[in-house]
Length: 197
Image (cartoon, rainbow, N blue to C red; front, side, top):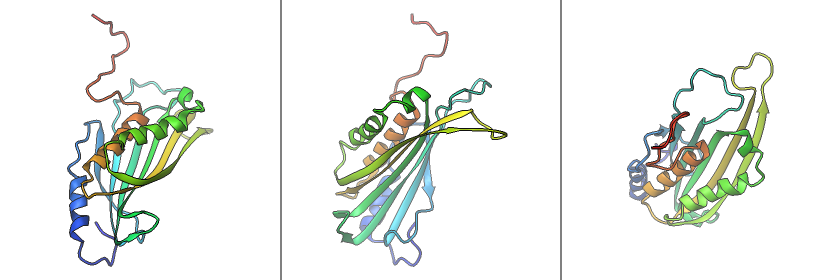
């Protein structure tokens, strides 16, 4: 999907978009195309992602946990952009509800940023920057949900030096998985009451 009024898509942009849809994503994460923001670049494409958590056992938790979603936007300017240091800019947003103990940890921003830096380590990028924010909300009155909610937000952008972007999508989903508290791929959480053999 391109911004309104855009001419025929450049080959590099089309190839980059196609490669984004070739990313290998773990089954707990649902990914699909969404409407990209307008007028940020001549060409843009966006993916939305959401972590599907197992249904709770009917109890209302005192702390929120596990809800996480995000979006990854590809911006392309064939003429390049001085601030981007390239022609392909990726913009990521991740929001996740986290446990109280994690939300109050002063190292949470550094840890969350390290998730992104490590996930992107195998990709070719430049000009990486962003912010990490941790907030706590308290619900009153007739608002449904847990009494206290703790959220982590990560906003970041970087420039891809190539047009093969599957690894960038996989890195973004890896950060989303970490923020949601999912176990590493191939590892299963043991249920309560489960004993080791």
